[in-house]
Image (tube, rainbow, N blue to C red):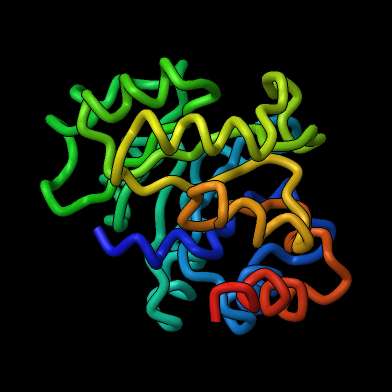
Length: 210
């Protein structure tokens, strides 16, 4: 995979933003996000047809801006609408099982909160790992203990060249230190989805990579 697509990795569901999620996504795409993950989970998340319709509209927007579109965990939905990849957590379906179900060219990302999980993801053949939480975050109710910049450095040493994206409470001021620690990019939810100007927020996250 082209690791540059991980640089500004935006993750969002309808319940992560105050406004219209499609408006927020389009502004973020205009601002330069490089990869988008549809994560419709948690309180007030859409289900069934409403979830599928939103996913289709978001996929269409991403295609218009030539940004890969990834679905979090919902393999069934991903296969139904046709996407660029899926992302699974430690409690979701194992990578080997996912590989058997999805097209060969799909990206498969996996979350890792420590070195052991990261090494396992490497052995299992993940295309990239989302490591974190780096800092404390309010987006996930069950978020693990923050690993900080040092945690990214340690995971990088363990997984060699495997692409890594840092996630969890990341603000624009943190980006340079995370890149130096070995991250290929940063994953952002609320710092873009709840920004008063999502396009401007996305531009600020893109700046260190330009």
